[in-house]
Length: 125
Image (cartoon, rainbow, N blue to C red; front, side, top):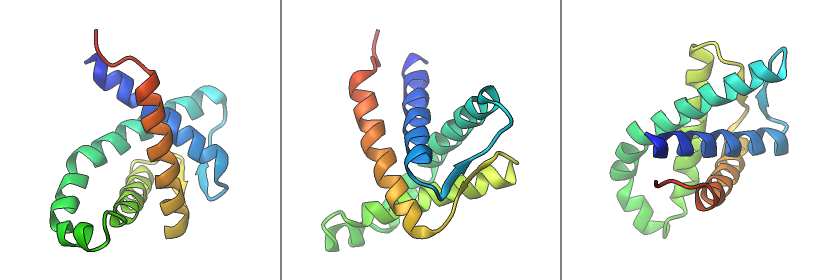
């Protein structure tokens, strides 16, 4: 359970950095508390998408991973971020990613920041 909380916090932090750095990734809200709550919900949603959908996409695109020497990972991460944005719209969360190339850059930022936060944050008892 503790590992789940740490990974969710790392995802929320990584999403916050992407929102801060990229103008076309938006998170709106009336107050800081509402933005924080939305960010945590989007982080949960992003984690769920990465847990359920990403492995299936990776298996289906395995030949492309070999052919592109892993660079297709950037596209897969972008698609997961766009799927998260679409699901956030469906769930009426105020998080939006505008465009594929923004999603590619956002996915790269989120991957790097999430990795760094997972290194720094404790994940075991």
